[in-house]
Structure formats: structure tokens, C-alpha cells
Length: 448
Image 1 (cartoon, rainbow, N blue to C red):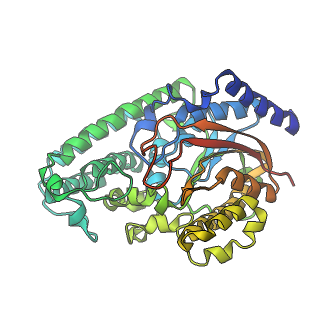
Image 2 (image 1 turned 135 degrees about the vertical axis):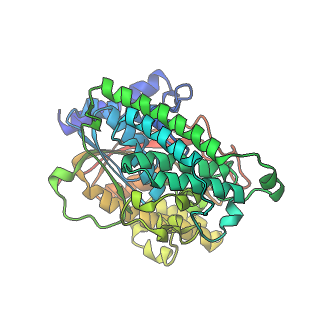
Image 3 (image 1 turned 180 degrees about the horizontal axis):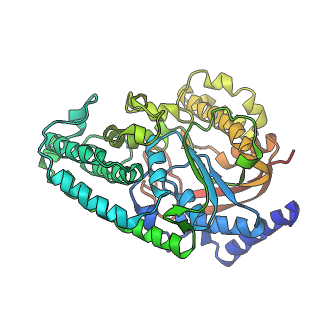
């Protein structure tokens, strides 16, 4: 099939679905999270059914697709859906917790061994009489009650006794979820937000009980995913039969010369919609769980510098450094009229608002340069983006992204909007309506 024919096939298929059901892409009645998608909670998780459908549509139009790339990996929704369709996958994320979640989901798949290991782990926890507190960090006692710290230490010690890295990673996920549910931070927000003292003291919680329940949930979901992969003939002796590459990496990092065998056929992703500090604070969400996890199990380069402060991971993310941002985007404003217009609109507001928008798009544009290097010529890119508001002014990320990519030689194939049917945040906050829709932007990388 020619490139132009593939473009038309994709456009026609998407237009037909929306014509038949204008609310098709909301997936309001079919967005349950099953098997690995329900291991643990993570901010702003994507709808698995939506990503599965997008992959299917792209494969129908381009049957040669074999390898998918997600440069903003998150909890690995696209990775898992890629695996379920028998594809190779490559994903990056700057957040160690996101990388850990995806590593644990990618296998190997030995459910019977895992079940045995769980029994051994629970016995080790029950038999632990050590009263040593395993971790120490600034404000530890602010975020954890003494009895909670004691139980979490038992769990951590017992996990460290497990010799198999793949098994430890699944155990760390259960511990991460236990930390989230037993810390003194509210679970109603992704930001670190301390509970009232009376509430902290009155909570009747057992970290070991919660850990056991969480581990049982992961066990069941792990069994379910293994069964599906086996039925599809995608496992051999417990290992997924295609390649999965997961990197703890900043997408802005310079990519070496393009190597044809390492390039991807399709990009599927949902990037951050702005700097983490004022959108989704992935780093704050991850800060407490990561204190309890052996970071070397995630990556040998991962160390406690990621946890220097509660904001360190978010500072390392897109838009995290604000210095010189407005100066740095002076040329970028010429490439994107939409970015230029919104920065002009923000001139009447406090300067910090324009700075945070400029900082994000400076970094985002840098990441686009590296992302394109990882894609084959004429490879398709499916971007799910949201247009956030700053000072009640809409930031047209869909238009900005399209303009930036076109400037780099890409082609816009089509776009459509999807309604967001369920949201954790309110329909309106103190200053402006919150996001109720996303744009799915289909682009194609230019050829040489």
C-alpha cells in the first residue's frame, strides 16, 4: 500500500467510526482496567481499549508495523497493548516508578513460581522480629506513622531476600501501592498533601494486611495476563516472543546516529500537557514509594539523587527548569504561530505564567527532535494531547504540536477529538474549567 493510500485509509477508518458513533472514542462504557493495567494506581493512566483500537487501525493501514515507541511511558498502558498485539516495543520515562511498573508488566511470566514466591515472602514477613527501621530521609516521620514505618521495614527486608529480580519488581509494586495507601499523604490528590493530625492518629491501618491484599490483586492480574499471552501464542518458556526495551531516560537526551535496525514503525503516546508542577505531579506522587524501593532494581544508574527533594523528579521533567525560558523560545515562536499567540496573550498576566508555558514547550520541542530520530522514515505518530488552561487562557497543544512537527518535516494526516467521560478532578476548579476533551493527532514523519 502506498503512503498516500495508507493516509487515506487511516482517515477514512477514523471518520467512519466517529460518523457511526460521535462519542465512540470516549469509551465511557468500556474502559475497565484488566490484567496488568490494574496492577497499581498511577496518575493519568490511559484508556487501554482506546490504545488497542488505535494500534489495530494503524496495523490495518500499515501491515508492516512491527515496533511501537512510547517516549512518555507512564504506567505502560501502550506497552501492554502492544504486547497483546504481538509487537515489539520501546519506551522511555524520566520517572523511576513508571519504569519499574512497566518492567514488572513486561515479564517474564512464571505464575506458578510467583505464587510460591508469594508464600515464601509472606512467611518471611511474619517471621521477621527485627525492629530496625530500614529507611531514613528528610521528614520521614512527617509522612509515616511510627507503626507504619515498622511494618514497611519488615516488608522491605523480606523483599530484599528474594533472589529473582523479576519477582522482586512485582513485590516492589505491591509495596509502592501499600506506601501510597498507608502514608500520611492524602490519596485524594496526586500531590503530597498531609492529612490532618487527628486523622493521622485515628486511622486504623495495617500495612502488612494492605500489602498482602495488594499482592493478591497483582497475583490474579499477573495470572490473567499470562493466560491471554499464552492463548495468543506470544510466550515461549515464560518469555514474551518479541523485543521490549524500557529505558529510564530523559527524552531530550541526544540520540546517537540513527541505526536502521533500532528504529520504530509507529509512535503511540500521550505526553505531559504542561510542566508537572502545575499539571500532573508524577514526581510528587512517586516520591514516597521510591523511598522504600531498591532503586538499583530499576536501573543501575538510578540513585537517591532522584529523591533529593519532593520536587526533584518533576524538576527533571519537561518544563521543570524555568531559567531563561522566554529567551530560549524566541526562535521557537517563529516555528509555531499558536505558541507565539498564546505567549502574547499571557503578556498582561504575571510573568511567571508565560515562563512556565515557555519552559515546557522549549523542553518539549527538544524532546521532539530526539523522538523523530528514533522513528523510521514515513512512520506514523499517534499523539493524544490535551489543551490545558493557564490564567483561563487555552493553550492549544494540538496546534502547537502539529506546527512544531510540520516544521521538522512531518505531515499531519488527520485529527479528532475525544470526550473524557470520567475525571478525577472537578469539572471546574477555582480559576477555570478543567479539561473535558482530548485531541488525537495523527502525524507522519517525513522521509529522507
